[in-house]
Image 1 (tube, rainbow, N blue to C red):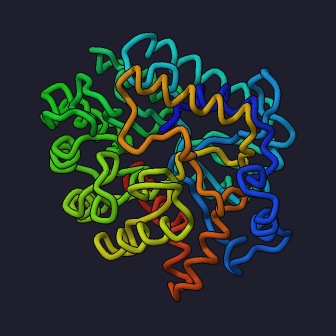
Image 2: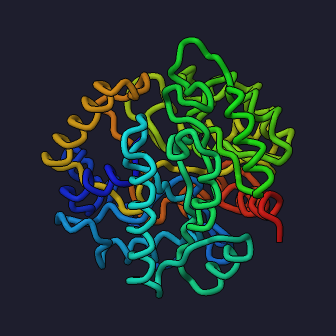
Length: 387
């Protein structure tokens, strides 16, 4: 839901010490029992490539510096993540204002963070970099857009973005842009002629097309137009909760049938009402596996690595952000100031390990779990980007 830059400033007031503050004191032992341990809960975790297909380092900063803190970096290490898809066009999401300049600024910010913390972070520009991130124990940052708005009316900007390391391109956010309709557009008009040219250029460049936040017709049109496999980096299943941010079985199947990928998020839209929990995530993952097959499903949290503390300051800033999104017309149904954009019983840095443990308890084979955690997305990157 949130853009990276707004998430950085939004979370800066919340010291990320866990979610105990959101429960009565009598229930805090429940969350304490899920605290990260030194040994992985799932035996195969340490040796598995783990990729969050929409996420961000950070969340533990408790000042206004907007720099990654020692706590943030400690959580990166605790997470066990190999790589993540990092949004770098954040300033302009939902509008055209300052999109190009905002994207350049975000890229510069993350380049500086990588330079300052080269022992913990690295940029991913090619498929082989995923293996290097795993070997070196660093978090690989894959730069991506959550809107095509930074292009403006110039497809030639792809050369600039590609040279700066942007490798994943989401076509729309929730609203309509020059490429096509987002998922909140009632007209559901599909992809434009300009959008088809963009897909063609992205295919030629071997960039990954992302259809998260796209409207149903835009999703189906782009899936048909693309000559390469595509991704829906972070979504849910409409068959479980018919929310505009979730995808129908037809959309999921069309993407999977082209060799693509579907990432399930940890967002309020997993459930029609109330705060989603880990069981809701597992239900969506299992439905996606049933529709797409185990080779095409993974996890795109749409959140920050560090756990979140629900303090009074957090609650106010969260409510203010929801109000701002509603004012700008980019708030999806289900966004509620009392329903947070994380899953309480997965509110921990090593949440992917816990998800693996839950899948194992549901009798999913180890090989399938490894695919869900990151193997499927790593395969997709290799297929699209080339060796």
